[in-house]
Length: 458
Image 1 (cartoon, one colour):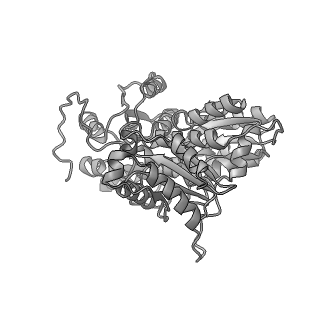
Image 2 (tube, rainbow, N blue to C red):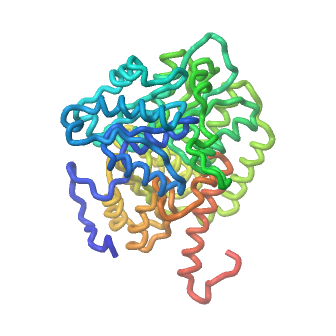
Image 3 (tube, one colour):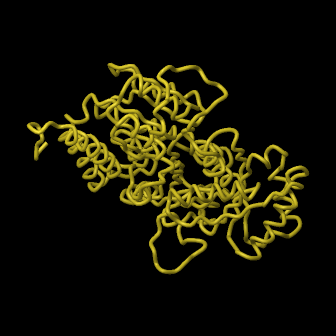
């Protein structure tokens, strides 16, 4: 067992991270950029950084991820990467002809002080950006934040670089979906569509990283939010931002720049989170909730009610992104499960307070820590065992070592498929989560049952 020697004695660590519960900012920025139609992400740094970011996304989504790099050499590492980036912009538009280049920085380009605002202005002045083409950019050093903050910075960059206000309203609702799967983005859009609301979702990776196999390769998939729609976000009726860490920066930037009012909600995971999303749509668009949405909700309530005895009192350890963990904790508490250990690798003091507020009435002690790692989670589990572990693929080592039922959830999931195609947000996504939780608990119940208690109907 790889983690057999993890100690139970917990000592304070401030300068050492073991098995981080996060990845780096540029990966989130690259994921966000892929949600823009005709966009080629560009990593301003070394080839190695770009290769890592691409491979992580490819292994999670099982799809090819195209991206360019400034290909820093020893010289550019010392004297700056301006000439590399300007040349790269010229080459990319000449050879690949994207609609947009989305540039994000890396540790190296940030450390030497490259100024993307100045460099992109120089590219425009030198005629390297063809008419009708665009560059968006974001600062995303890997030594601060996480892939979630990188996503947030790039989405804010879309607003800063492209959103416009023309005083002619488009009658649409902006939705910033947060760092969720392409399948989740589809479900968030579907709920709005069922309510008769026209939306602009940005970014939108549905049909980009979960598209069908047609036998033909498209370097720029048909999915994604168009540049025209991104420009039009400044004329929308309002913005709903889902997930404070991933989406609030862009929503607030759009409100400041174009005066589009925003409502910042938690991710619509589970019953109450989805209720708030549907209610926000209803109020902002002044529409009624259709029977089809009420039916979806009723089905989720029915399954929770029918199977409540298997959820009640079960202790759960969860690790992942802060926005997902906050919504997931609320959902688990609502079905009477006890999330006793909660860890995210993303920094942020508000996260710990929010989790403690959500769990303050539970009859058990809750451990919660932001900017932490899976090593800490493992130590907590050794001291207080749990009935279920929910985490990304890296959690499988803890689950195997401690013999705990395990559900893969979050980013990255490297050894399973389905997360790109089946949502876990909305009422239908809540049904899938309940199914996964029940499967894990009942599988263990079957496995551990003595012969005389092994039942056909449970």
